[in-house]
Image (tube, rainbow, N blue to C red; front, side, top):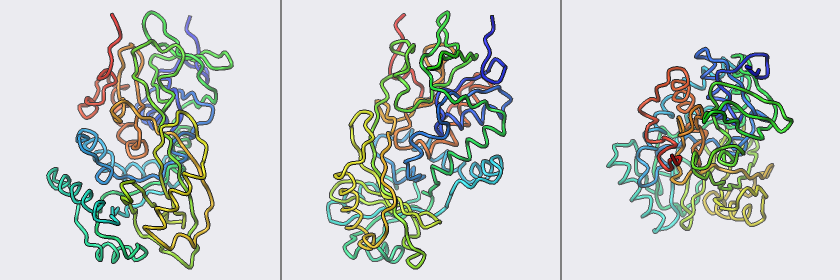
Length: 388
């Protein structure tokens, strides 16, 4: 007997998880003519509600992450067209996409040396990254502290507003015919060694030909998921602050500013509407999302050292979110070892950046059965194999 998905039709694709990754996969799949249901109690929530939204494949780059760099740059190159298309599909909902560039600066000799090494790495990879003296950095951003010792200017690392992006994706999904089933998945359904849908906490059964698991840091915890199909996706806590720049002080900063402060990493993201986002801590605390005095102090202390004028700005929000980190901090994209189950999770720091490319790659696979070459290094089967 064919069981019906919400909306009265058997779904081609069921997406478990309605954050930006799940929503973009659903939207792009629906555009390819597939019947799609998203299962999430609050579509549009998730880590993007807390993320600052830096689109920074170059300044986020770490050693050994060259495949992730290629993926991130491919996504960044798509962002302008993606944001424009999404805004139109969402009835004019702006995503906050800004082509503002990023500078990364250092406050002491050790931090400057770290940036020098990163700059050399950029040049070896042929990336567009220009070294700045302290004076040049302050000329670009006059609010920087006099003690800034140098930095990098990357003109193609931009930003988007994660909250606006989430709202736009919800609207675009609705307009594309995606069924947003506002319920929590309680169990993955597996029949005949194949994923066939999910059961909700209220006992409803949602059936589909394929299931996309996009539940962030809880992806591998879904009951019914056979052992070994997904590696653990650990939650990495990040606390951030949102400040308000009064109109008389604008522009306070003109572009994203990243910094190495006493070996720790900090970023400040100025929005066009006067919001200034400061983040983020990196804490291995399980699924705890408590905002702590220590986290707020650490961020304000380091931000004040970098941009002393922030003490004059109103603090309007503190928040904490969970980055979904895979064992190698790279995403899981594509079919798993369980037939019918597709992964779109583990994006760690780069979920917002990788939203456009994830949607394109997964929709191509769902529509044609062929995973694009760009996604091959991120196969979920790179970690584990299901025992035969």
